[in-house]
Length: 393
Image 1 (tube, one colour):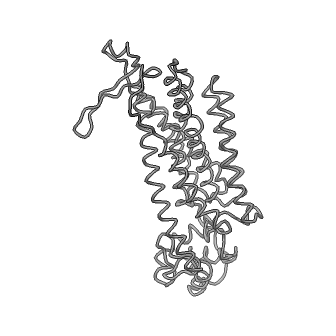
Image 2 (image 1 turned 90 degrees about the vertical axis):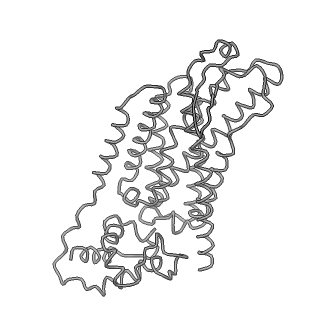
Image 3 (image 1 turned 30 degrees about the horizontal axis):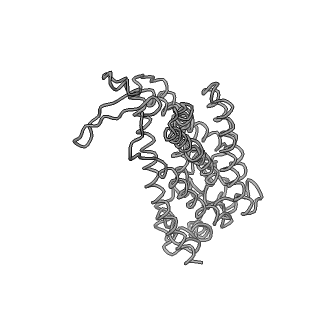
């Protein structure tokens, strides 16, 4: 049992590290190319325009000068060496799927199932998670096919509504932590599938047409650019979902789906500001609106004061220590029995450590009821009430 938990910890650490590395490569290139596309200006040299160059940019970096050029459709002839940007996306999704499998699917009983929300078996919870990933892509792709030539704003509103609906459903079926992670994984699947099913195939079709001596159809580039722009807007929401597991005050809220919806909307508004700014347009109302949304959520989530304690004898610390020993120290101890090491390095196996972490214990176990994770140790409402009274003393 301990060896198995230890191996899972190692797998989690290495996969998370690798996922972060390749994710930085993918997001970095995505941000760069959207910035580049928005920053290009019509060429001043008539010869470049005659060659089909639609925009160019001069930049300096690392002591060197660069002159990227973008063709309206494609150059007259293909260069011998052509760099592709695809493995950053594929490796990010693959490492992410391995990570979510290691942390959630292989430990679904602890990390995904919340009996207070739904009486699910671990296998049912895993099935819901996998269906979310696949279903999210199918709905997104269908919306794109129906609306890509009509209104991007309408598409965005409908897809955002779908994401909010999924957040509502998942937060009523799975643990809050698992629900948030799966919303992020669903969006990340959409992004990677865009690269795999649309962006790269479109580029390959353009190249194949050129190799046959045909004039490339601009529709492939148009579709690829649109999907790439969608990926750019989805990046900040995905990143929040991926770090949300560290912040129980978001996913443990009774209306966690609404919390997530507002934060994701703020992220999109802020990203839109930067995309417009790269075009030379300063629209400050977008980041201001995003900041106000985040501030509103912060005010909304301010922890409420503990309810007045019922009349009775003061809680003895020995009673508190007994509860924490039974319900918390299985994970948070120098030598835990339920995990290979104490999460976040927090240990509650001595009176001194318990007293020093009192505010955090009260917030996580009483106010948010986020701990124990999935209530794996079966803490009762009466025991939480004892901790609440201790918190007031």
